[in-house]
Length: 68
Picture (cartoon, rainbow, N blue to C red):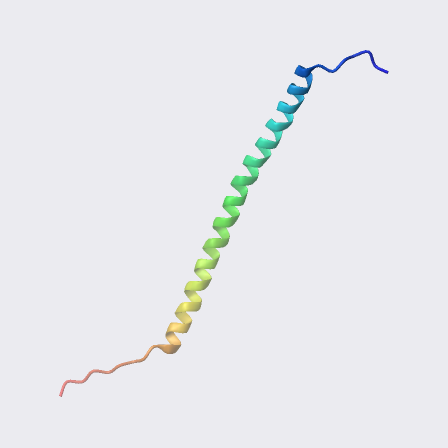
């Protein structure tokens, strides 16, 4: 067995190192997730615009006005 004892400060330092690493990775993942979500939203908006436009062209009526 080892004669080295584990102290409270050793455990606290290790836990702070781990939590700092996890917090950094979470921050990076959050910015990437935001960028991906914005891109998907923009593509969906463009898709719905063109689908609605196509559907509107099918249903639109042409009205001719004549003066008598």
